[in-house]
Amino acid sequence: MKRSACLLLSALIIPFCIAFTGCSINVTQPKEERADTINLSRLAYADSAIDAAIADRQIPGAVLCIVEGDDIKYLKAYGYKEIVPDSIPMTTNTVFDLASLSKCVGTTLSFMQLLEEGKVRLSDPVKMYIPGFKPWYDVEKKDSVDITIEDLMTHTSGIIPYINVDKFIARYGTGCPDSLIKYIATEAPRRFRPKTGYLYSCLNFITLQRILENVTGEKLCDYAQKHVFDVLDLKNTYYCPTPDKFGQIAPATYENGKLLLGEVHDPTARIINLGNSGNAGVFSSAEDMAVIARAIMDGGEWKGKRILGKETVKAMCTVPENVHKFGRTLGWDAWSTSASQPGDILTDRTQCICHTGYTGTSMVIDFKHRIAIILLTNRVHPDDSGSCSRVRALVANIVEGALE
Image 1 (tube, helix red, strand yellow):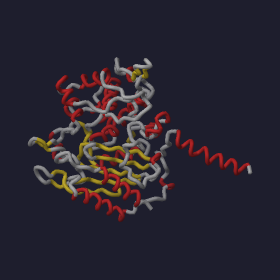
Image 2 (image 1 turned 180 degrees about the horizontal axis):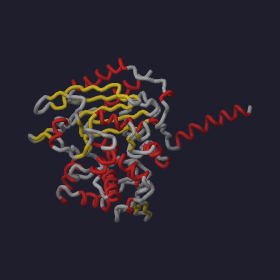
Image 3 (image 1 turned 45 degrees about the horizontal axis):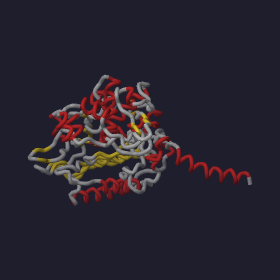
Image 4 (image 1 turned 60 degrees about the vertical axis):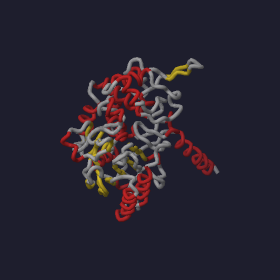
């Protein structure tokens, strides 16, 4: 009788703990404990899904990379990287504008290094690093709450998502990152009390950029290149590509007789921050992204090259308890209302991180099965009318369904 009561109590307690505590990511799961493997023949379904999206003119082309454990199991190019003004076939080494996926592989990986080096704390108020950074303020109750670094990284700060670039230019001009930070610090509306809501915001990560730059004395683009991309020996990952790299890059939109090529598509990153931006700006290839994914799955290290400690990676991939219901980890998504790209078959979202980019990029990392799904497209080419939301989820379903 006592044993039955204990079992019943455990059954009640365990789900409660899962629901109200941060998820626990296993970043160092021994290979011998994993019986699952991908049935490669079933990945032909992914070919069909991507080809259909191309035929429907949702994307001009794509590169799909599937990582299992330490190996790239599937790498394939589809369609065209450019269709206007010329038709140029897609190749597996094509470099893409990652857009908001830059928040993860550029800003977040860099910022987590500051955290493990004791240079910042998640609970630190932003005003410690950006003087005059205003708090959330309740006019009626005359109550204020400081915005913290954790609030920025989990998109629970309440800061508005974007700026109106045209109005900003009319007021400040172009190439004025200092004016942008001053606006975010002193004028940008705060929509709710920190940690009480979720609002995905590019301004959060531009603020993180400025904190990193104030702490390190380096530009984000230089810091990430030196301490993340170069450490992992990535050959095709960088901010602000030089003209000699343009031939490998998938172009973005074609407007007013000009093709946007080698410049970040996001207007705030391109026009205001001149390519060095916390919200967007990284260019990369599928194979380089696979290295990043494997380093994360292996606890911050790839082939003896370490960018983060194991516990740091675990913290990065865990949804903090105080904002658990919103489903955002530090810099990544897990199960927020924005996270559709892991599809329908991956049920244990506590063992997953993911993110997308506006231009058509996405990455899903499934820690339970040690697989990563990297789908890179330039859906904004040629006229910013394409869509890849559905094909992302379809491909994720196909990959997860191929596990046996």
